[in-house]
Structure formats: structure tokens, C-alpha cells
Amino acid sequence: MLYHLLYPLHTSISVFNVFRYISFRTIYAGLTSLLICFLLGPWVIKKLSRIQIKQYIREDGPQSHHKKAGTPTMGGILIIFSVIASTLLWTNLTNTYIWIVILVTLGFGLIGFVDDFLMQIKKQNKGLSVRKKFFLQTLLALVAGLCICACSDFSTRVTIPFFKEFSPDFGWGYILFAAFVIVGTSNAVNLTDGLDGLAIGPVIVVAVTYMLFAYVAGNVKIAEYLQINYVAGSGEIVVFCGALAGAGLGFLWFNTYPAQVFMGDVGSLSIGAVIGSVAVITKQEILLVLVGGLFVIEALSVIFQVGFFKITKGRRIFRMAPLHHHFELKGWPEPKVIVRFWIIAIILALISISTLKLR
Ligand code: 57M
Image (cartoon, rainbow, N blue to C red; front, side, top):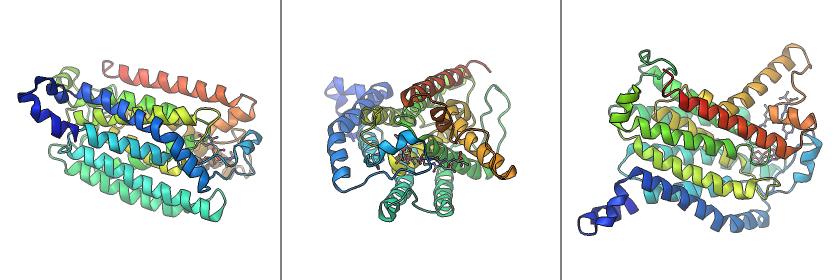
């Protein structure tokens, strides 16, 4: 909105020319969402506590989690609100990709909201059934994939990291592929969100990394120089990633150990899905496996644990899945698991960025 209101004034007041720059708008989008979280955070937490939106803790979980009972959840509402408000203020609203990421955030947020809400009604740690949740996620992700593919000039070629020339064209299959990326990331972030700040830390890292990828993909000269797929209009996604990173930092202020609030499914499902969408739009879809490698590791630990448990009728690879519980049960204090996982997320992001050159 600010872009549309103030940039046109640059012909008479030259200082408004800064609104043209993606870098300027990204910084202020980040600061705006951060400020919204800081200002509204205490009020939202108080409100959630007052209306009894409190986390139910599983009996079978690590002992250390029982003291977390009663922590307000659904703090994701704060993240979604600040990201969207900041995006509306600082992006070019004629950009279709911006509306797609807004709709994905709201749509997946709604699924998470219903899930969290049902948990509150049932007064136990179970919301929507896995089947229903998966169906709704897939439906929405297919719509998002279709909208992305319908954008003019959007290529259905997939970028293969480390290969300059090889970029297979998935054609209509790209919609299914995009939906897979979006649903997979949504669930992987959800699984990771089991310790204070564990998910939101890597979300910030991933948002900052995709800021760079979106900038590169949206700039015809740099894209050509680095020989990566150019995506016209993806530059605005940089501003969105800035808003996401800022909201992540603002939320972390309250979610850091010992957490005053959890994000709930409303937060984890929507943030995960929008990260998947950003990866698709910037055409760094497969690289997300590395950028968001921590989420992948957590999801794989569950897949292997459940698979092994079923095949061997009761034996386990890890003390408990997802992986963060394994280290907790080994006796690592919670902050140690969290910070070490963050360090891994940063290392993976740095390696991913190096692929821009390593090709
Ligand atoms: C939800 N939710 C947290 C909070 C957060 C298939 C199976 C592996 C699924 C998995 C599962 O349900 N995962 C997704 C994870 C829960 O947090 C809430 O959920 C939201 C995110 N969706 O925002 O509202 C608990 O996590 C802790 N927490 C924090 N700090 C935070 O900032 O401490 C969350 C955020 C909270 C709080 O304790 O209550 C969750 O873990 O439930 N299931 C599991 O993760 C379970 N694993 C399991 O059953 N493993 C089995 C195998 C065979 C599948 C095994 O290894 O034997 C564990 N979950 C819990 N306890 N809580 C089991 C033990």
C-alpha cells in the first residue's frame, strides 16, 4: 500500500524514489512485522490465556514437557497477522505471486486454526484427523500450484542443484510436484515444532536464504550471470520473505526457552506451506531439501521410526521421534538441542547458497 501511495510522489518529492527499491522495502517489511509482533505479542498471549487456549501435553511425551502444560498456543495467529499486514504495506500489490503467498498463508492457517480449535474443544492433543488434514492440505496446495503455473511466463522446468544445463520440464505434472513440495514442507515444519523456538529459528534462516534466491531469480542480469532460471516478478517475494523473517524474530522473542507461547498448527502448517510455495515460485524447489534440511531430517526421523516400528513390531531406531525428542531423552537440556539444531540449519543454508556458484 505504501508502495502504491508514496512511490508515485517521487516525481515531485525525490526521496520517495526509495520505495522503488526492493532492498529498502524488504528491510522495512522485516522491521514492520517485527514491531507488530513486539507490540501485539504481550496482548495476544494474555488474550489466548484468558480465553483458555492452552496446550495439552501428551502423557507419553518426555517428562520435561509436562511442566509446559497450560502454555498458551495458537500464537501463529500473531505471525500470520504481522506477515500479512507488513506484506500489504510494503509489496507491489499488482504482483500475482504476492497474492498467491498471502492466500497460501491464510488457507493453511485456517486448516491449522480448525485443528487447534478442535483440540481445545476436545480438551486433548488431537484435532483434525490425519486424513482430513492431509486432504485439505493437498486440495489447497493443488490450487496454489495451479495458480503459480498459470502466472505468465512461469516455467514448468525444475531446477536441479549443481547442474546448469539439466532442467527437466514437468509440464502439467509440475502442479502435482508443487503441491507435493508445499504439503511436504507444511508437515515437516509442523513435526519440527516440538521444542521452544526449534521451528521458528530455522524458519528465519530459510526465509533469509530465500530472500537471496528470490532476489537473484527476479533480476534478469544476475539470473543470466549465474545461469539460473529467471522468474519475472519474483523480486517482490524478497519483500515477503523479509516480512516472514521479521515476524519470525518477533515471535521468537516470546517463543524462546522457556516459551510464553507456542505457535500451534495455525502457525506451523501455514509457515511451512508458504516456505514451500516460495521455493516453487523462485524455482529453487529441490534445493529446499537442503535449505530446510533440518525440517527434512526431522520428518525422515519420523518416517524411519514409524516404518521400523511397524516392520519389527515394536522396535525403535530412536528413543523417540521426531529426532529432537531422541536427544532430549538422551539427557541433553532443551536449550542445547534447540541451539545445536539451529546451528545445523545455518550450516545447511550456507551450503545451499554456495550452490549458486557450485554448478
Ligand atoms: C505436532 N506437536 C507437539 C504446539 C505446537 C506421527 C507422529 C510422529 C506425529 C507427531 C506429531 O503429532 N507432530 C506434530 C507436534 C506439541 O506442540 C504443539 O503442536 C504445535 C505444532 N503443531 O505449536 O502447539 C508439543 O511440543 C512441545 N512444544 C514445545 N515448544 C514449542 O515451541 O515444547 C511445541 C512448541 C507441545 C510441547 O510439549 O505440547 C508435540 O510434540 O506433540 N508426534 C509426536 O511428535 C510424538 N511422537 C511419537 O509419538 N513418536 C513415536 C513414533 C513411533 C511415531 C515414537 O518415537 O515412539 C511425540 N509428541 C509428544 N510427546 N508431545 C511423542 C511424545
